[in-house]
Length: 157
Image 1 (spheres, rainbow, N blue to C red):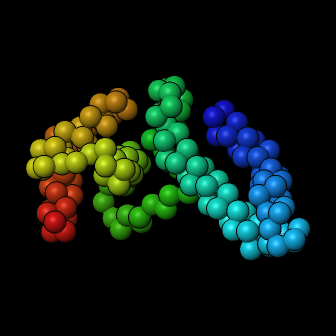
Image 2 (image 1 turned 120 degrees about the horizontal axis):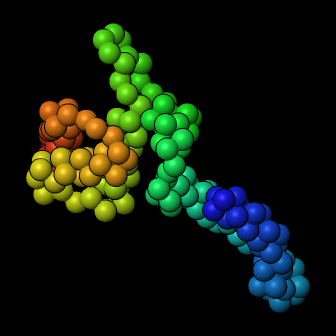
Image 3 (image 1 turned 180 degrees about the vertical axis):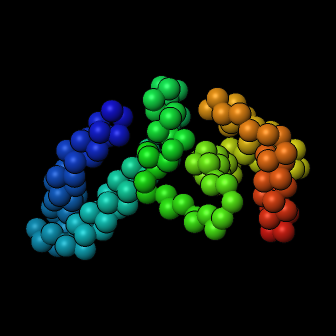
């Protein structure tokens, strides 16, 4: 509902870009409108629209707590069609919730929400995500993945 409303609002605002450019450039060069101003305004608005919709997509699961049916779909990966999943080359299939956890942790790191000082901070963040999603995982599985992420973080500091 939020994404739909924002998308409609952005579509309704788009024609206003031309009106704003006309008003802003009306007196420049004896009434001649500079096309470069219009092109740049259109490009900037398009960038804003893309960023806004991308952020909404990233945060759409945090707007409200998913219903049991939404959680089932989320765990099965149905709602994250845009995210490719790695092929499993044998053994037990990797559960979809691991990909969703990695995505969430990556976004938190990128946005600066998660600023780990040690591996334990990464482990806590991962466990908190699983707890919030009502998903039971073994401590060993979480610690192994937190160790790998922490090693990568340390390697780039």
